[in-house]
Length: 235
Image 1 (cartoon, rainbow, N blue to C red):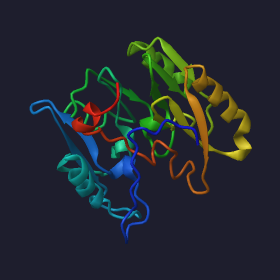
Image 2: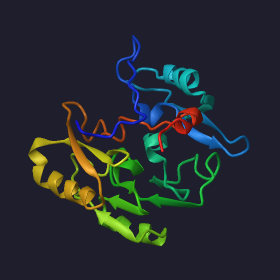
Image 3: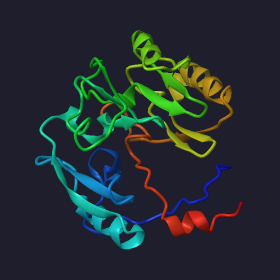
């Protein structure tokens, strides 16, 4: 579809698993500062209508050498990994409360907590980090918190209860956004905002993703590329 897909690998979900929810419960990669190696923590949801995703931890260990260092018990929706966001300067963001991993497992330079403005209560519903120390947010009331955290270039996205235009997947210089036909006006405004920052925007149609089931950020999870792959990359 015209996106730069370097370092992108496609895997098939093994049977009987059908619907991995990788952002919220799949392996969450963390750099071990003592060893300099990537490790991961799983999010154990205890009760869920979604299939077990422990196979993902095995896959990332077998393929990438990222060891599973344990599981974090999820007792509330806001404890899922979608409510853990960290920018390039180590500032940590969550909604409703400071996520239990922040300041304990994660070394945060600063912890910023937004109020809940949805039933799910995840930070990735509200903001996304862009290049050049920029951030896009869909709640105007959160702008003062972002300014206090040091952000100067803050872009305000359209706010719609049906879909979050901040809940996007960014791959290199491409922004993937869910396509919602009857929200064309809001989508066009969001597209122009991302394009103003040098991104190409690709809309993805989906019949199942919604305000209840998340958007593209929820449906994906970045994994650090092996050092050997990065060293083999062309200059």
